[in-house]
Image (tube, rainbow, N blue to C red; front, side, top):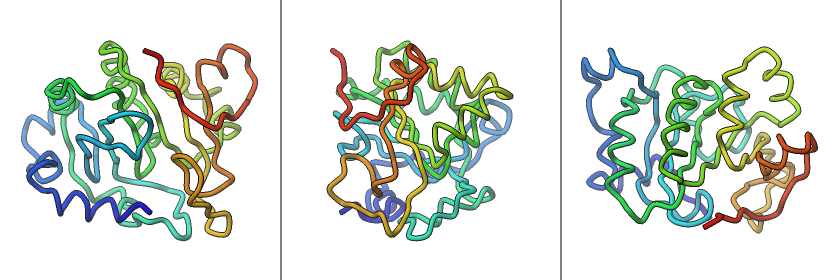
Length: 202
């Protein structure tokens, strides 16, 4: 069972030093993300060895959320995208990047720009969101950058965590209502076809 993510950051301070850096003039003047923490090497936030970014701020307030500390939009720290990319580039073992939270789709523009750079590096990109794909379809009609972000990513794990549907046997998910969506297939066919696994194409 996954422990509290923020506790993992604090217990491994030397490895996850991005989260404990002070906000600088550079972070104020350059494009940045507000994050709760970063796992430089994760094997539980998607397939393979992954660089997982947990953003700060979430509007869903799911009962039973294992990281309620990520809900506030005022907490966390701002980290420049350039620093995140430098950190990713330092590890040749990384196979993919995961955007998690918090709610990544509350910071669409910076995550879009980061996503473009991630794909330039031929890394798999997985996004977690509390929004359902049906809710996102409505948003995409008014938010072209959101659509571009989802088209850039490879897979989406969507839906709020529902306490009474909690199921620890599910792959990469916490409750049975949450679905894995192959975004390439979704935008190609226009059909919502959940999948049970995520395969990284070599």
